[in-house]
Length: 435
Image (tube, rainbow, N blue to C red; front, side, top):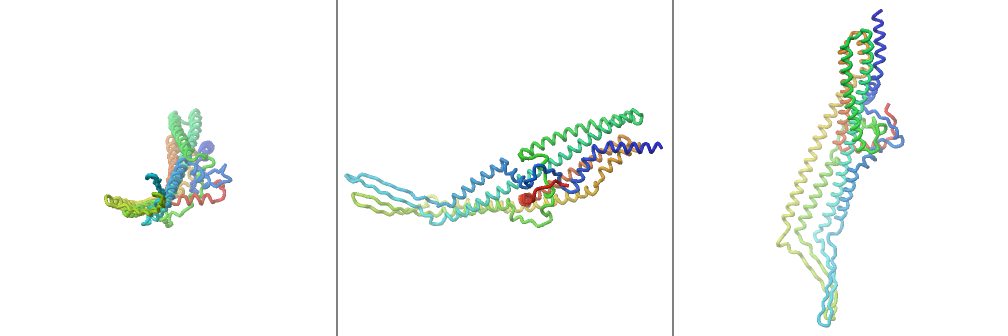
């Protein structure tokens, strides 16, 4: 009969201890089972999350500055479409005895070697390089924002875990004191509970402080972010096939490097043509000694003292150096993509394994430990150690989820398709909260 009373008490104790902890454990298990972030979407009923994110990133000062820099480079490129030489107006006036002599003329240098066509091609590559560099910056900023959102989710989950542990230990301490008064537990058990609670108070404070810091950093990146409306939707993690083929030829970093190489190739051609002088023609009309005067003029620079061959050779060398850098960017991007894919697949495998191992186990373990402790089959020190191990298991799940999602974001960045994924999200109908 005594055993049955303890069993009943154990079940009652399990019911008292579990609500403080099982809520967050169940929420974590549900979100992990979907391999997604928890996402409440209040305030986003009219606008999809992807579109919201694009708008928020577009308002960041770094992106606004980059847009202005791109516009400046486009204006410079437009200038290369214009003619190379402007006409020159020439006048001359002199008084010769009773006669006033004057001429009015116009001179024009002819682009004999068609340098303008090279400059126009150079302008096209300038535009391409500017657009691709801006696209790469936008992708990097998007990845930074997504990583910050994943980090916030992780810190928020850890803070919830710490708060629930603190609440559980407070409940446990109250029950320990009651059992101590009835003589069921010793003073040592109460001291162990006090020590565990004091440690958890520090952990909770640190987790809460870190959460506040991460939220402040997020608001700096996303002015309109809030915990209720700015979380990553579940669909992001299912977009893009990590095992599929990736065409790096369209990666913005590679396209930008190639465009910069082409710019310098055109500059080398222009420098080569600069060794060839362009002629100038002129037409003058006026009066001299009372007679009408019409004259034609011709001039040609003589590249004797300086034939500009050194500048042409330097331009060719710069183009060759940029070609090598372009090849280096391709090679670097290929290996970065391979490494990112390997990291992601490894984290995905371990994370899914963790989900299989922990499925429904967190709540069952909490009830079992409480029952064993109340029935006397588990000492207070063993109980507290088991609770700590359980907590570390849940924390490991949070960390694996964070690493898994961070690796997916990095892989998207390395493929150069992170903007495509966000556009796909922006095209999706308004979000509904994750189940």
